[in-house]
Image (tube, rainbow, N blue to C red; front, side, top):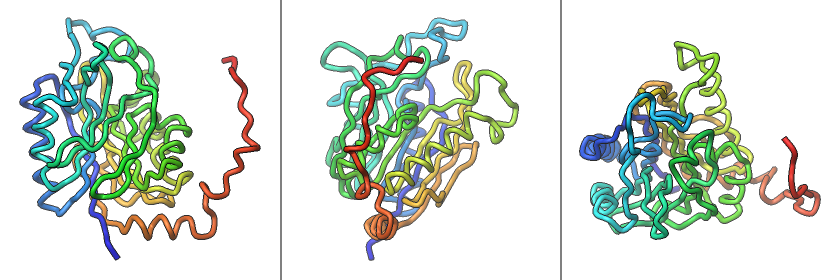
Length: 285
C-alpha cells in the first residue's frame, strides 16, 4: 500500500509579491515538516485577488495583481521552493496573446507540470481577466491531477471532464468570499460557505475522486474569505478541514486503493449513460 500525504491551505495574500512569497515559503516548509508531498495553495496567492466582485476597486485605485509569465522568474521561484513536493498555486497569468488570465499552476522542483486558466467567471471578474476554455488532467509524481479555480467547481461538467480524462485527484484553488447580501458576522454560518463546502463534497462524490480545496482566508478589499480548506475522499467524506481560520488541512490516503474501493460496486463514471443525456443548445434564464 502506497499512501500519499496531501494538504490544502487557507491563507491570506495581498498585492506585495515578496510578502506573498514569504507566506508561500512558510506554508511549504510547514507542509514539508509534516511529510506532505502534494500541497494546494489558494487562488491568486501570488499577487492577491480582486478588491471586489462588482467590477469596482472598493474606493481606491487598484490595477489588480501583476501579470506573471508561465515561464517567468516568479514561477521558477515557486518551483524551486516546491523542490521534491508537488505544489499548486494561483496567480495572474500574462498570456502570450496579451491578455490576463486567472490561472493556477502546478509545479515541482523539475518545473511546470500543468497550468489551468479559470473558465467560469463570477459577477464582475470578466472585467479583469480573460476566460480559459479547457479542462485537462495531467500526470505528476503524485498521480494524475485535474485543476479548477473557484467558480469552476459550481459546474459539474468541469470536474466530470477532468475525471473522464483520468484525474485521480481534483485540486480546486479559490478566493471564495462570504455572501454579499444577508451577510453574517460569523462566517462559519455563512450561506456562501455552505455552498463552498457542498460543492467540494459533491464534486468528489459524484466523480469518486480525491479532492483538495484551498482557499483564501482573512479579508482583502471588500471581500471576507471563508477559508475552509479541506481534503475530501472519493466518498465525499471530509478527511481534514481548516474551518474559517487560516491553516493547513492535512490527510493521508492510498489514492489508488481509495478510488478502487469507492468504484467497486457503484462506479459513477462506469455507469454513465451518455446516450440518454440530451442537452438543449440554449437555456433561457
